[in-house]
Amino acid sequence: MLFQNREQAARLLAEKLIKYKGQNPLVLAVPRGAVPMGKIIADALDGELDVVLVRKLRAPNQPELAIGSIDETGHVYLGEYARVLRIPEEYLEAEKQRQLETLRKRRSLYTPVHPPIDPAHRIVIVVDDGIATGSTVIAALRALRAKNPAKLIVATAVAPPETLQRIEEEADEVVCLQTPTFFYAIGEFFQDFSQVSDEEVIAILKQSRTRSESGESQGQGNK
Image (tube, rainbow, N blue to C red):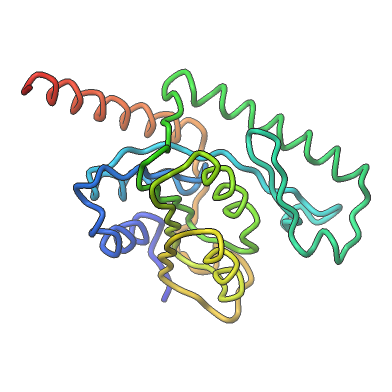
């Protein structure tokens, strides 16, 4: 199956997650591509939208190859490629600092309009448009698990079977629309896989927070 775009994939995922409607799930999208998807899913489930900030660590001279990932706290997950390629420690340290700086910049962009939402004791749905090696999502799951969510779910359009197996070990539930054996890049499974800008992410988060705050105000007024 070739998805028309991220929006179609998000609607299909929302259908498979509909059992969580009415349970106020927290939908955490991996920026930037998954944020529009996260909004569609959060709206469909009457949940809240936020982002989970993680970055992949790139292989030397192969920026598309993930050797691991890092979260905002500096926690690092290294995949098997890091061991197979015998990445030098000096390179790893420099790459960690580069990606941490990117995470800090993104948080400074997003936080003024949308302070992070606490995932403790919530049903948490981590959304990504597609998953290749899984290192980024695994880092996100481990960071979130430490914050004591009630349930940790991964929702994605596409991922190879071996990656899905690794993610299933970290999550309580995984919803994936496609698991192709032959997997080269996420974009090959979408007709339209246009980049999502920081400006779009900020606008979506601002709109979602305004909607959430409006709902809270109405709820308090009805008490």
